[in-house]
Image (cartoon, rainbow, N blue to C red; front, side, top):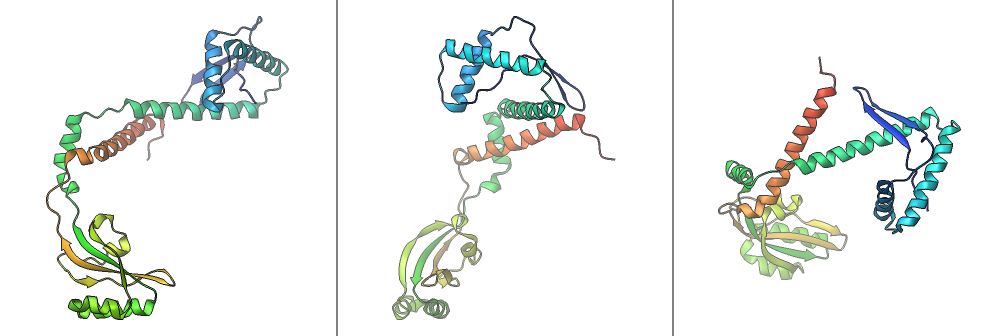
Length: 254
């Protein structure tokens, strides 16, 4: 197993341009703190689900530190490698800050309810349709059924038998849950009609028949959409705060 190297005297300073990383060898004697041991144990468990005793962890940290010190003393840390460490560190710190920023955003129940009532039209209940899914083995049969049933809806049962269709689903469905290629053919208020055949595969062709269109009544309750509203506002606030921080340092557009 490859263990990470705990770097020594690592100094961080920030400027407008970048994080400066200064890595220097320890001054003898080389020591290991309890914090170092805890960090290694925590790292190994999170990364590999590997548990190590304190004595073993101390040994690993100490040996890594000795070898790392020798690496630095021999001048083996190249500018390119140092730059790689700097970039990786910047990525890690940026990720940590994003996590911190996300956790710091709290939205009160009052704000959530206020948004709900201010945007109540967005939470109107979906229209519903009573629908039948009719399956055919031949595209030609499905097409002929589709044409005829739209001309003579009262003869649907006769046409089903004539063109060997089989009802495989019958029920009431919210319009917003229907696939786009089905929902796009729905006409508000219109009933007893079929939409064009949909080819599932060469020997499976479906025709959807609309028995009844049921307009929406009322609005979705707050508790049903509370989480959706919270996620939406959280994303908006996070984007706003992130933008404010970036604009402190990014050059302003002319």
